[in-house]
Amino acid sequence: MEISTIGLDLAKNVFQVHGISATGEVVIRKALRRSQMLPFFEKLPPCLVGAEACGTSHHWARELTKLGHEVRLMPAAYVKPYVKRGKNDAADAEAICEAVTRQTMRFVPVKSREQQAALSLHRVRSLLIKQRTQLVNMMRSVLAELGIAIPVGIVKALQMAREIAEGESKLDLPTEAVNVVAMLAGQLLQLHAQLRKLDLRLAALQRSDDRARRLATIPGIGPIGATALAASVTDPSQFSSGRQFAAWLGLTPRQSSSGGKV
Image (cartoon, rainbow, N blue to C red; front, top):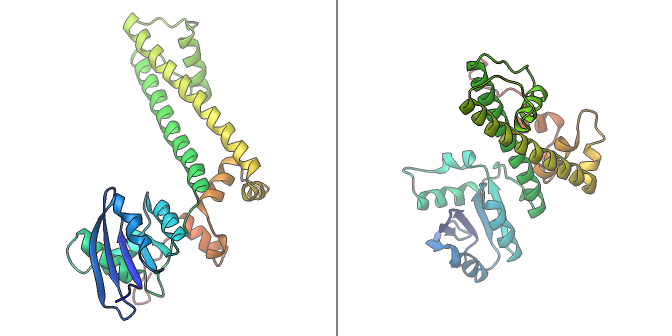
């Protein structure tokens, strides 16, 4: 019997497949190793493949689309209600197979490799900013214990870090404290330099991407916001209104009401 719909539970090395026919009869339940994935789908006629949107889902969606299959990604939270009982790969694949056929299901557009590469720049930038903040806070606390307060603001902290790293600081500190603060200051300046390079790369990306260039013409949107939006939103037409887009971004309150009471 020919497979019409497949629920694919993605993982690192072992993938679970749940396939049904056009009449809804279960045709196949099978676990695949990573090396078996593409050969298995190459032998199948084009069919609908559902998967949860996760870290590797966009890669597999692109690969399976090349083989002629229609791939639909869904948020994991929307698939969970279709899990009948228990939690295992087979049950998850069955739930995915059922969820992907629902007419009211919401799907996640498949991102290109270029979009994912651009988003990786933003993720690394966010990580470096957090690490920079941690280093500044640690340096502040070490100096505060010795009676020295760094003025508020990242600019003042970087200025003091530069003075300490270059040996120009006239702070009266114990030798071990000087060594610790100098180490923190060196890491802080190195992180700040890496952030500057990332900002330049994002500015260059914004100039080279047509959608990002158009987004940057909107007041209040700069290179970082423009490139992040261009990489995150594959198909803007999936949003019927600006409010729906704002809700997707998390800028509108979530509704919770029952029996006419909000």
